[in-house]
Image (spheres, rainbow, N blue to C red):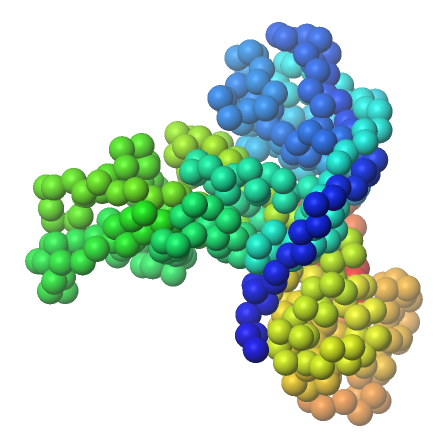
Length: 453
């Protein structure tokens, strides 16, 4: 039996379920285009771009607004407002922000244009009842919203950009799209931008002729030629060297490649699916990713939700992974599933796979071997209470093995450090992360992990 967590098979009943979806409305209250309204959610997109560029959902005519100025996204905490490195900044109710949450009635100002956030009425939305799309598995509302889009994209040959955190299953979805397309019988070739040294990236993509560079002892096809007639999956496209991006764009636009060391052009018939963990809108605004390449790739755009936002999918995925790894049906400890459901999963489905494998092999829940110290310093206990006793002495008293004891002390220090610096900067994640010397997303993952323990 396969141990690959990607081999999920969907059940596809011909029925749909009506759900009530909350909608938000963004209104241009002041500035060029005043009176323009755009709805989010309720069957519409849950994330939009605001700016002057052609890729923006809400396109403004204000010359002081950047091409990709700000993104607005529906989340469980509210409408997330993320400034994408704009030139003239973004404010929410007069306060300059980089990453904040807005609620109905709030005013978001982008340069000299004012946007008003309103609550839209509830919308009845038809969602499929499938528990997956090809290799993708998930019965949560967040996943089922994606399946109709996936089915429509699979039936076309347009480029697709898949976005999402590490471990959310971007390659799995790419394979599912390929297998549901008319190219299913042809090659599915993967090029990982993070796995190939920059000096070899061009020849790996486009191929090379014998003698083109030191070590090129024979001519070789690139991944474009290898994928001819099929699908080329370019993973972590956001990490592609800037100098290579115009060459990739040319290959996409002309459907032909030129091997390194050759003057000849080779015609290729390739369907492109790309994926990234990076925020490409921010990368474009920062000049690290070409706007025209992004526009060419994002004809179809899918954002995979993190596992922590896929309510109800933990038990389903755990059962599937358990059986795929050789476990007996119905033999998963109930408390293990409960622990899994209470954990925020910063590593997403990949981390869940590893946790299930560890549970099956060692009988241990891999997301928290709860020691006496961890029980006494649980999420109910705040930092001020925790400092009342000596942590190291309490670990020593617990009589744990060295590795476990060291891990407990490290985790407790990390938890206190993150909350202390977060509090010091008044909940401003960007400033707290900068003061900690870590990336903002990593800081958020650390906070999520420690809130979930």
